[in-house]
Image (cartoon, rainbow, N blue to C red; front, side, top):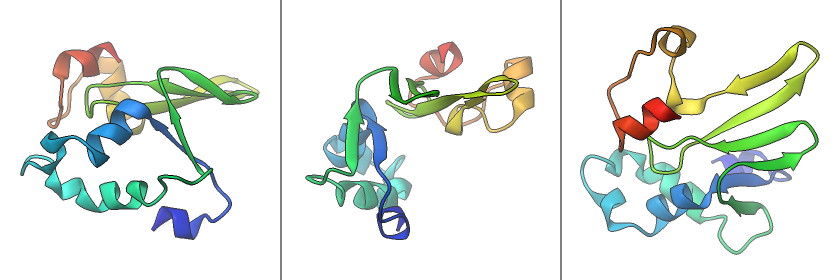
Amino acid sequence: MFPAAFPKANFYFQKREYDFWTISSFSKRPQFNREEVAAKATAGLEGTDRLVLICGDQKIMPGIMVLLAPGHTPGLRAVAGNTAKGTAFVPSDLSPIHRALREDLSGSVYTDLISSLAS
């Protein structure tokens, strides 16, 4: 749905995340298969210039950085961007609410809890 909805957008994925959802047999297990729609959508970008696979932290344009933040999923990405007030951080599924970051609360779904807490 996203590639069609945003026909001029590039899609940045951590290679670990992309490979997990498109190649790994673990992603087909019942614990993960609810993400099958997302896997099919991202796989449809393969072979196009719109799919950008990155490894680790990477600046993708001036003031915007994609960060590796594993734990919730194997290659979850977060985004940091420069603003007039400083750096804004969008943690994606790493932390569902700001309070969780402040109080070191964890959610309930992780592929690796220790990596999630470190991220």
